[in-house]
Each structure stands twice: as C-alpha cells, then as structure tokens.
Amino acid sequence: MKNTIAILAFFFIASLGVFAQKTKDMIAKVDYKGHIHYEKKQIGSITAKGGFDKSGKPMTMVNSNGNIVDANGKEIGKAPKNGTFVYYNNGVEEKYTIGKASHTGMCEVKNAKGEVVMLLHNNYKQQAACAVHCLYENHCMPSDKMAEHKY
Image 1 (spheres, rainbow, N blue to C red):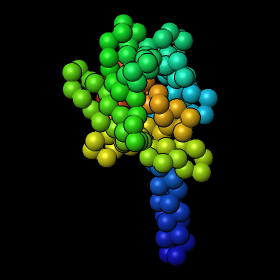
Image 2 (cartoon, rainbow, N blue to C red; image 1 turned 180 degrees about the vertical axis):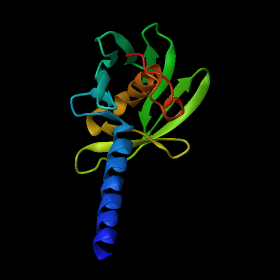
Image 3 (cartoon, rainbow, N blue to C red; image 1 turned 45 degrees about the vertical axis):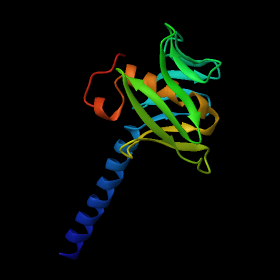
Image 4 (cartoon, helix red, strand yellow; image 1 turned 30 degrees about the vertical axis):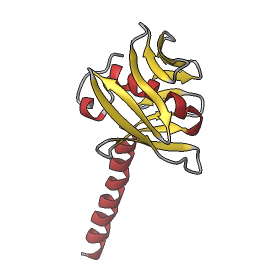
C-alpha cells in the first residue's frame, strides 16, 4: 500500500512539472538577440530599428517622437516611459507595464489586467510595443491563444 501511494505521489509531482513547462512555453519571449519566440517557434524579431516578421520584412519602428508606427506609418503605440507603454489595438488604447529585469536580464511585460503577456530582455524595453504588435499579428496575445497562427 505504501508503494502504491509513493508511486501515485511521484506521478502527480511529475505531471505538475510537465504542466508548468507547457504553461511556460505559452508565454512569448524576446531573447537577448531580439528574437521573438512563441511556443518554441520564432515568429519575428526586434532591433533598435524596429520590429520584423519571421521573414525579415519590417513591421514597426520607433520614430523620432517616441511613437511606434507600423510599416504604413500609422501610429500604433508609444515607447516606454517609466516602465509603461501604450499600444493601440483597433482604436483602443492598451497599457502595459514592464517589470524590472531579473538576474537573467528578462523582464515581465504585463497588460492592464496584470497578466504576463511576454518576457522581454532588458535590452529591448524601448521596442516593447513593436514586440506586442508582432504578438497581435501572429495571434499570440492572451485573448488570441485559441486562434490559429499565421505560420
């Protein structure tokens, strides 16, 4: 009987680790090279010049006024100030907060509801709205998790 309980406890603990890994993979990440990953696939990248899709086509840039503009020049957000930035989604202003960097250099990006929507390397805080735009375009934001990707 003790062995059965021990085996069941082992499987329960092991399954928690697998679930945690799957949940961790569901969060988008911008690594130290500026690659935007979601579910272990690179969906785009960001540089000091802006955001690019996975084929390297420009999607966004930060203009001289600190605004994020899409490839057509339409304003889609504002670069971070004091750890916050704004992204415009279908005419609605969405506010995001960038947390402090951990020992790995990664920062949590949270939406207004407090949900972590992305892990962002500290080097790319100014381009955070560019990364969020890429996540929307690829349907990787929390409200879009069930949508199909544009791979």
